[in-house]
Length: 299
Image (cartoon, rainbow, N blue to C red; front, side, top):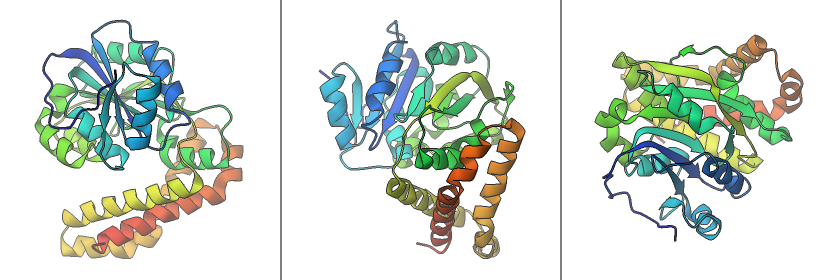
């Protein structure tokens, strides 16, 4: 039977790879994600963990009784779910994704191969799955265009949380904070860069984004993540810098939009879906900006 574990469990026996799938309101794609991963695990050196909110944990227990579940007692954000599971993972390498990202058929193999090199973290590509609707496309453009194919393998400053893997030794000094606050990849990546560690991207490590949010769900998520980001930024800024960020906040959605357009222009892909979904895309950017402003103001 699948087991539900609390976050105070400490890892004992080491395995080569821990795969952590965060699941929150993802019943539409969770079975496909887990089935795809399970097909790629052929030894005891790889463990599969699902860090799940209650409704998703029930689905896993019903359909995947052999999968290890780290269930939250209440709804949590994805980075918080990751953090609880990382505290219990046994892998020398820890790979992260979400249930709305369907891995490529060689995903596990490519992660293990990439980490034969001396990289602290490896990020892969995030593609849009076939059959995306307007909300799916808007979510994709807001979150994933920096990780869209094609790109060359090489060093980067950011590894995507939804398709990223980290050597345990590279993040071991941050384990207590990760368990307490969650795994916020932008913060982790920044600390690794400050330590002069190498973050790498590999175009062969691929997942496919598929129906992650409804319109209302992503509106809430963008606002909440923006608020947390703004609050964290305020806590680490002087009063003068905080005032600057507040005054500059109306420019936030336009800065994000410019980055999206740069990435689309470089790849020369998905221009028509972007035009069609633009009103939704810009709305989601506004939601983040509103949340960030509230966080900067102390909300």
